[in-house]
Amino acid sequence: MSAALPHTILPPLFNRYGLSDGFGAHVDNAVRTNPETGKRIRTDLSATLFLSEPDDYDGGELTVEDTYGAHGVKLAAGDLILYPATSLHSVSAITRGERVAAFFWIQSLIRGDDRRTLLFDMDVAIQTLGAKLGAADPAIVSLTGTYHNLLRQWAEL
Image (cartoon, rainbow, N blue to C red; front, top):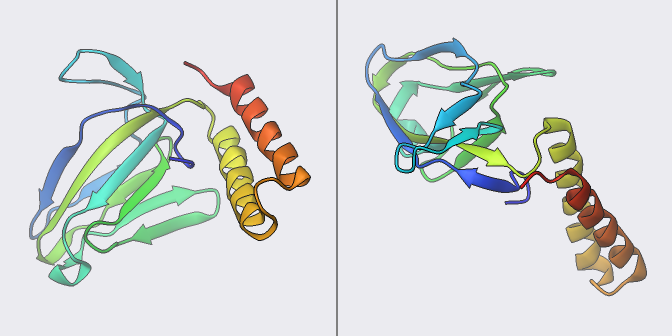
């Protein structure tokens, strides 16, 4: 929740990749339509929920590229990766077994990746310090107020 600050979440789609299946490098569509409501959303974030165990297949890594390079991801069943929909990403070809996943898109309350990252980092720091100092500590109260005031300033409802 803290990383996405979701406004709208599209219903998931599912894919099953078998031998030689993969998906080439692409950036997700900027706008998608909810098939249940017909409402369009801006896709700020992409999410992939792994449904197969990594030992059940070879290949099938989700590779996401960012300013620090390409990162291959192959998570345990039940684990999810959340990444900016603006990221170039791909799925490598399956060489053994089968990869099943759910994927979906999120329109965030915060349009910009940079602002979402700042708010996420601030929230993590507040939670960490709050656990050490207590939520009533004046510095935590001040930081929490600043977090919510930034959210109020940047949120698109």
